[in-house]
Amino acid sequence: MLILLTNDDGIDAPGLAALYQAIRSLGDVRVVAPSSVRSASGHGVTFHRPITARTRRIADPDNPSNTLFDGVAVDAMPADCVKLAVTHLVKGKIDLVVSGMNSGANIGVNVHYSGTVAAAREAALLDIPSIAVSLHIRDPRRTQWGFAAQHARRYIDQLVIGPISPRSVLNLNLPVSDDLVPPRGLRTVPASESPLVDRYEVEPRHTSPGLWDADDQPRSWVFKASDSFSFMHNPPDCDVDALLAGFATLTPLRNDATAHDRLDAWRDYMADQTGSK
Image 1 (cartoon, helix red, strand yellow):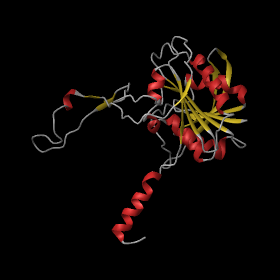
Image 2 (spheres, helix red, strand yellow; image 1 turned 120 degrees about the vertical axis):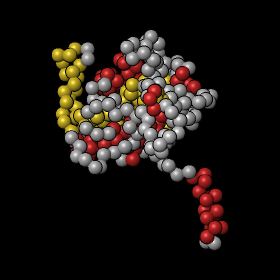
Image 3 (cartoon, one colour; image 1 turned 90 degrees about the vertical axis):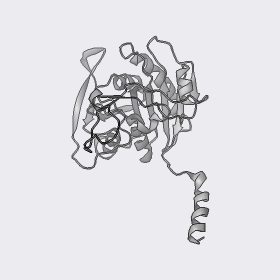
Image 4 (cartoon, one colour; image 1 turned 90 degrees about the horizontal axis):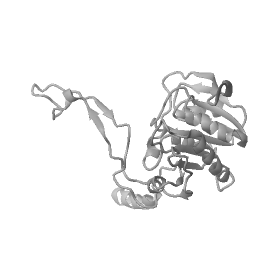
């Protein structure tokens, strides 16, 4: 099996190295990943500038004198990495795309912002089954990447022989690994639709109310988004609820953006408005 491994944390990320070590016996694993961190980049692609791709030799984190893998670092987005891997950088038909292991959970509405999930979505658009893998992080200094990656591999082994299809996107999240406590199991659950509680820090000198000052001159603000996130509410039996309870979560995703349940209502309404059938 020819496997493409990518991510959004960059080719030097510890999560990518750990996942490579965990899945390399699953098949022929090729790494094409961003040259730098592209977290929360969503499904952006690069059209208006040249893209540079360079080979990179990544050292084994357990033995830096040895090579873990030779990959390709792409100066672009995660979705670009998949596009270029399929069209130019990987010879042969890719059977599976694995994206991750991301530093931080991709649950709930985060699936729309995540570059990790976007790479998996891009693979599905190209008719390649894909799995996005993310790890809930509590303390980055204590994160047990290898431990989490071994559990990810156990689940991936089950997924690749399951009802996975060429346009499948499987979103796999693993609970905090700091204390080497294994997941309580795997739950297949929907993604929460709860919005995030957005938090921004504002520069003190820019905090006066109003878009315009007393002289009718435009003002400016400096905002910095919070490094952490929370959800406005936590519906039961969803990915957020299960992950916080210590379970690994699996959520099948799709790229079809059409609200099929609303098509007939809008057809009928527009027919009445225009007098057409």
